Length: 248
Image (cartoon, rainbow, N blue to C red; front, side, top):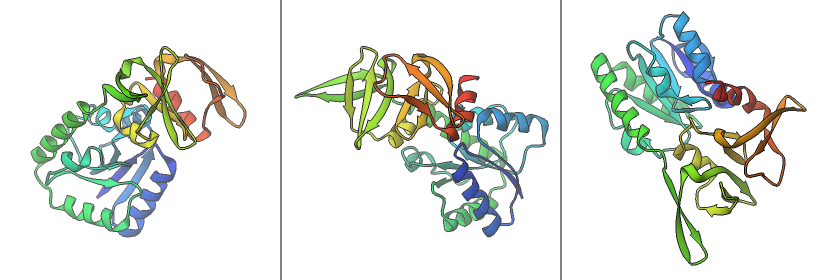
């Protein structure tokens, strides 16, 4: 069996490729870090037997890739959080790996995959999963302000950021409000077409990026609206995916 890995975090991709090499007989043809680069390769090459496919990528989702294929190959999804997988992966023909991937979970997923022979089962499972996740993005956040609660629509949020172990959202009016969700959790809740995590401390919405400039050490510096009090830097490892996210 041959495969490709589609994963936007280089360290996670390298770890997965190493585990596949050490614990399975699967040959990995290549690793891709975005929807765009994966689709470019798939359009010019024969579809591999298996995709190790991250659900949320910097410039879209794994389903954006599957939508471009004439038929689904076998798929093992990878994800950092189990927000969706607890209910969405109860199928015989599709499996998932939680990151960081463990060797025993990889071996079990590959063994399960070998038992799948009916293409229609794969298609039905993936279609159902895609519909489940598509409707799962947050539309509002309930925020406590003093003794009262307020529902903030996602469309009214410019960006999220963390400071001193606390996560805030910034509204279009310029209010900084505390949210109970970490940035890691928010990544699984927000539509990746609209929001991108530019570094460990911030998630931004493309609509509210005022300007993008080159910065030293191959990074980028942004200005946002409303303005942020500190420099807004796209980390070096995120720059490539960030550019592809904006160039969809």
